[in-house]
Amino acid sequence: MVKVRAQELRKKDPEQLKKQVEDLKTELATLRVAKVAGGAPAKLAKIKVVRKSIATALTVIHELQLAKVKSESANKKYKPLDVRGKRTRALRKKLSKKQQEKLVLKVLKRSRNFPQRRFAVAN
Image: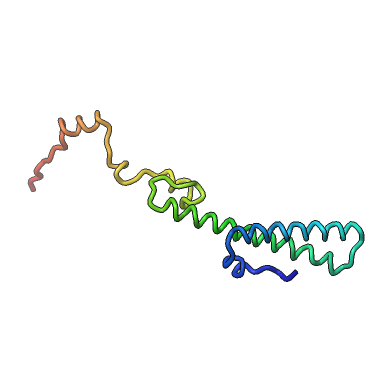
């Protein structure tokens, strides 16, 4: 088994990818049995390649799912957590400009009833 490339996997549809992952997992199981039975060193070295190939295939499957979710939730107000921008917690919790400018009713009334006085300064 030659190492699987992500570029080649992206051309396949999700059904083929899932089938390939299953095939790779069965191959990995046979290689592990061969390892216990005392197989050839070539087979033992192949275990790492198969494991990495499984990881690559699963990564491509996840990327395809994420792209699908992104396209579905593109124009919606609320998005799934894994599609939202990460940034920092402080930036995510930060108030918007409109929220910052909003005043409590009591403060609003006080500012209307008692506006800031302006004094003319004579030299």
